Amino acid sequence: MTDENKAVIFSLSNIRKKFNSHSNSHSIGPISFDILENEILALTGKTGCGKTTVAQIIMRLIDFDSGSLSYKGKSILESPIREFRMNNQMMFQNHILSVNNKLKIEKIIVEPLEIQSISKIEIREKLEKLLDVFKLSVNLLKKYPDELSGGELQRVVFARALILEPEFLVFDEPFSNLNRDMALQLIKNIREIRKDYKQTILIISHSSEYVEKIADRKLNFSKLIKAKLS
Picture 1 (spheres, one colour):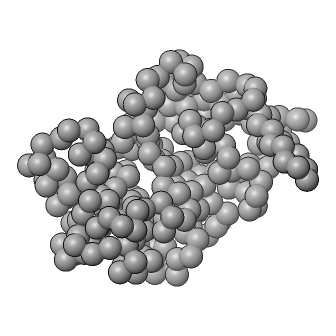
Picture 2 (cartoon, rainbow, N blue to C red):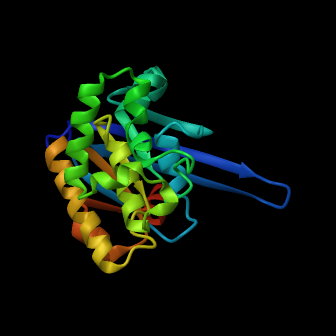
């Protein structure tokens, strides 16, 4: 437990990742920080500094080269990947590329539950709840992604991430490409979701204005690395 009496969900210690290509190579780290239970943590910093890479490491989408990463007090590798995927979800920056344009919206949202063999009655109940939370019309369910506005599609992706009621959510640059009204509505949605579902949330963002409105705690990526090196 921490001074705030909150459990540590993820703990990163001296994480490093190196990338090599034909033209150059670069590395990220060392970086260390904790993510606490039921907090909204913002990881900020300039574009390209490595914030999203660290989020992908946490979500087990890419491996790290050195350091350690624990999940609920144990090595993250001890957690079965299927169970981990159910309890931890990530919303990517480009929500257009994160959906299958050949599927209707209803299928996109409920597919994670269908994979888990959830009953149709329970699926319908969860779907209706999320439509209400995100103010999505039932009429949208029969449409395809390219028939929706950018704001509508983002809420659809958000709903799909929540349909499994995960314990932890990552938002990668959620405010990019949103006008002010849409960004403020998203902040409202995130607050409501955290209250209703008791989630821990990590927000990757370079937008200090919106981060100030939503985060319980903020960490600057570049300063974390400098502090470790000093």
